[in-house]
Amino acid sequence: MADRMPALIAGAIAAQQRAYAPYSKFRVGAIICAGDAEFVGVNVENASYGLCICAERNAVGAAVIAGHREIDCCVVATDASPPSSPCGMCRQVLLEFARDPKTFIVTAVNSAGERRDWRLIDLIPDGFSGRELPTT
Ligand code: THU
Image 1 (cartoon, rainbow, N blue to C red):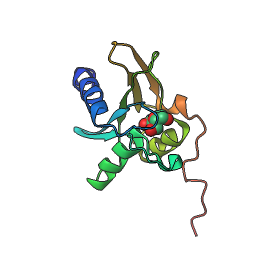
Image 2: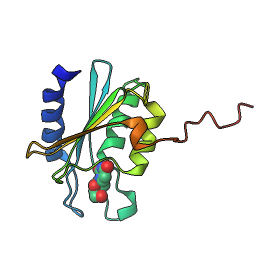
Image 3: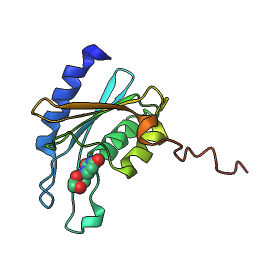
Image 4: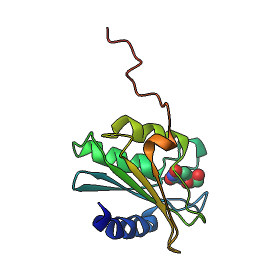
């Protein structure tokens, strides 16, 4: 994984250019890893602000559309300093598909070279896994 990180970070930063963020001006690029496969997402905003979709969730959607339901890491690029972490909704969506939240790494970067890393389990401890739901 460590050897892939420079390319993943560069990819997330490059993806920021494709963000559709005319309202917030906050461009976000994300890459989801599913094994060796990688999926890009950007934030896509809407004039009806509540319909804005985050980069991380669009990247998860791309992975699922391609048939990947077990994901291993997320790299998210913004212009924030320090680099900003995924919002609560995105943390929950990452949890839904994380192969293992204890080893799933979320990395936040910016183009100034700053970087922060977390385990998903630490970003959403005691999260709602779905195992709480009735089986019948
Ligand atoms: N945004 C993301 O894409 N990811 C996050 O984790 C936080 C926020 C987007 C949503 C909206 O388009 C803009 O950033 C400002 O909130």
